[in-house]
Amino acid sequence: MRTFLVLVFICATTIMAEAQIDLQLDPITNQANQPVLVTHAGDGSGRIFVVERRGKIRIMDASGDLIFTPFLDVGFAGLGLITNGGSEQGLLGLAFHPDYQNNGRFFIHYNRTDGDSIISEWLVSEDPNVAYATSESIVLGPVDQPEPNHNGGAVAFGPDDGYLYISFGDGGSANDPHGPIGNGQNTTNLLGNILRVDIDSGVPYTIPADNPFVGMAGFEPEIFAYGFRNPWRISFDMGGSHRLYAADVGQDAREEVSIVESGLNYGWRCFEGTRDTSLACGAATVFEDPVAEYSQTASRCSVTGGYVYRGPSYPSLQGIYFFADYCSGDIWSLVETSPDNFSMNLELDAPFNVSAFGQDEAGEVYVCEYNQGNPSAMTSIYRLIDANQTPEPEIDVDPLSLAFGDQNEGTESATMTVTLSNVGTADLNFTSMAITSGDSDQFAFDPAPDTTPLGPASSRELGLKFTPTSQGAKTATLTIESDDADEGSVGIQLSGTGTEGQSSVSQWQLY
Image (cartoon, rainbow, N blue to C red; front, top):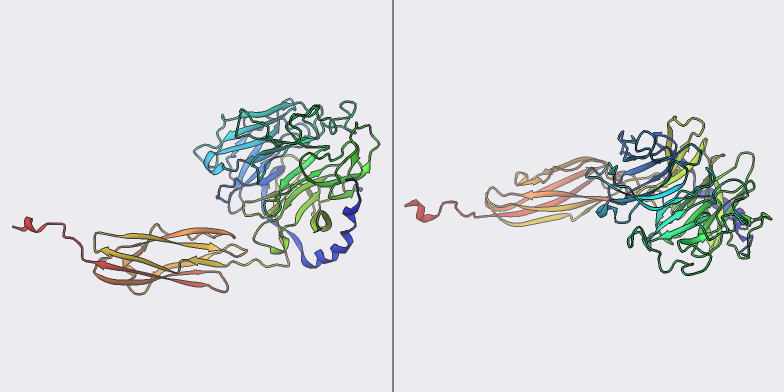
């Protein structure tokens, strides 16, 4: 409800946060062109996908290079589906289906050539780094956009329900002028809302039965929450609470961040943050407060929503929501200090326009640099780090011994695996993997070992084969050396027995 409790806790927690965190930007790539999102496919590949407003979805490799061939290009040089004439139009959102690894489905949010909004579904091709260019299926739209701004533009899957959430702004211009009460409070269309649909049943979707306004007169059933001006961006906390955060861009006074819950009215155009606009806005009298807000200044102009950090590299950042101001580059942390009370703390002043944040599969958080004045210029993407913490790798091997059992000499072999895990907070680099001592010639890697760096919270299997060439007990040691400072060398004991093999020529054939 309309209260001002949210700001009471800021001063008390600022000193604590500053003592714990030294937030910095670690450059990952300088090859992005007007990025508006960094995300992942959730398929275990660890790939990072960069969404560019002018129409390309590009994949970043481990060295920070963006692969030349786009994953998908709906821009002018590609399929030509979008307009990016207005500074807020173009390819704006991407979400991979929760079961993408098996079904290859993903969804985008864009402005088509006449400016109207489209939500569409696509499929990946046999090449995991390229989508089918002819696979588009319209899920929602066209949604009429009366102005070129305030498109919202996000799509995201709920971690608990698997439904697709879609954000739309109020249709643009000042004071939400379209209709007697604007679109933010007009629930008979889809603008100014966050929607929720089930794309796994029905064509193109069905309305979840527990959507808050199903069957209610005067409400579109897709609406999950309403009263937004331009939610740029929305994201779920992928750990802990699974809350949905939305950063709603203000008009000329306040910028705000809200936690979105089913059926609530977030105030626009009646309120801009907690400021009463005195605009006519209909019969609603109950509005939900933002959990954080700040005033516009000469340098601060537009909020950019972010993500809750859930990565393994910096435990001090766990559970903190990071967001920014586009114009000033100011980056804040948002922490829940007590139930439903939040503090925001200015952590960093980035020397560029912050267009978007992003998150990889491990939960690390990224920041996008934007160059609006020169659309062809390449800009950078950074990872948020805490300079007070030094990430370190830590190896874990399971099991520490392999017993291959009895195998006939010369005719039988057995294979087994050990699992190598990095339970630390930085890439684990392998310097050597070798089978040594004893009967090392009786054991071999199968296949050849993968010695590329192993990222935090990642695992891979290492295959080994036992092929005895003589009878008797055989032993050897698999030695793995890495840059784990505490356990740089790990030995895995290998054992097996060669038994008498059956002759390939039977006795009666000798006479």
